Image (cartoon, rainbow, N blue to C red; front, side, top):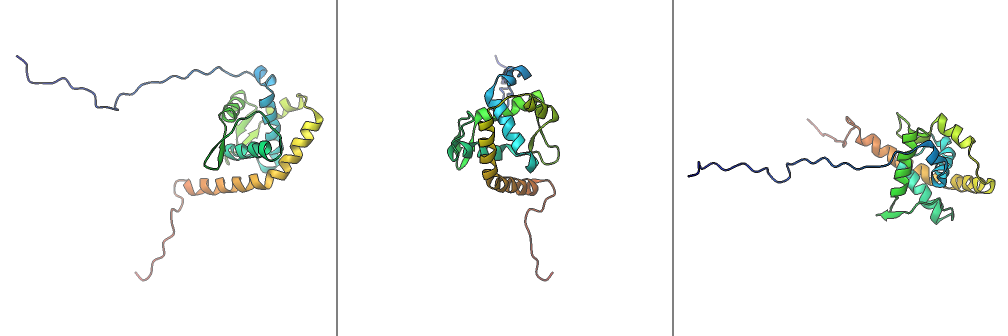
Length: 173
């Protein structure tokens, strides 16, 4: 009755499904009306003298501003181990990159303002007291942020292709 052949079933895990996640596009006007993103740009401007800041270091900085200095920029953090993480911060960074107000330095991969971002900040009004308080707090925290940046740079350097993995010492032949 049957030919003895079974129809082949796909092996579990071999099917590939396309998952589409829709996200609304961000416009420059939306950034103009979002206080959190504007304050994030202000933080990035204060980190310009460091050549920018890594996203992870930025998360530490904003976490320390909130917990140690009492300056809440509107981000919720949760700790993974000892590393502060914020979904809102990541989304805001992606939005600022998308509209062209921020960029990743091609060489160092640090976040920094674009010239368009600097012009945007010049046309944005902030309370003078807030700007001074934020600047002073960031200046105090810069050594801690620089230490995190140095750690990330060392990790990135060691993870590059062709980087020495371990040192070997050979005795004799």
